[in-house]
Amino acid sequence: MNEIFARAKSILVVWVDDVDSEILATFQETLQNKAQQAHIASENVQKLLESRRGTSSCDIILFDLVSKNDTPTNLDLLNEFFRLLHPNGYLITHMEHLKQKQTIDHFIMCGFSSCNPLDANSSFLIGNKTDDVKRHGSLWLSQKPAFDIGYSVPLRKAGISLIRQVSTTGGGKKIWTLEGDDDEDGIIDTDNLLDDNDRGKPDVKSYDCGTTSSGVRKACKNCSCGLAEEHTQAQQNIKSSCGNCYLGDAFRCAGCPSRGLPPFKPGERIILPKVSDV
Image (tube, rainbow, N blue to C red; front, side):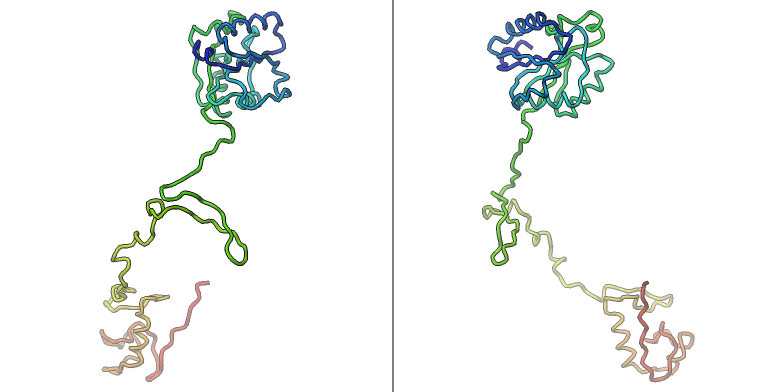
């Protein structure tokens, strides 16, 4: 704790209405002995939001350590503390044991990266608290992360030096382009994701639409493997060897190319109607 105060350049003491001015002055003198190179300022909690202090202007904020009793915080107040603190800055306050979990959750919601209890070496900060308040609460130290509000970093990959928006020639429509060196490590070449099997032409004979109970291949609905076309051509060119093809499956032989088709008149060309799924 002594190291934190020794490095501080700016300390803000936030006090509540029931604090006597002499007690506040004594408290600031005690802080000045711990933080000799720091500028110490004080502000009433009711005026804090109206004062419009500069963003990231404080190394340490001490909230409600001068009054005898504890004053609960709220999200608006914590957000203001977070805005006022430098990156890696500290907020020190006294919390009641029964409300510590809820209060710490609020601190994390407002952006504080860590909340830790302080040891007995920091008891000089709560010298004005009553014994009952000290017994039912403890000092806590919350730290702001190493970055400030609005902080951002560029997202870069190897081989990509810049992502920018440029205008196409002609219509002036803007597109996103990647600029970088010739190193391909940063961009995935989709052609490298294909192997020899993917580039080979598929064998349509290996795609079987299905077979009937007698083992005869039969084209399925919406056939795309070519079997339907083969059956259609076969019906046009093949002549019946038994003469019963037109009667139906009950009269057809096992190898009849017309198996599965409805009965038809001799010499008639069979055209299957298109059935909608709707």
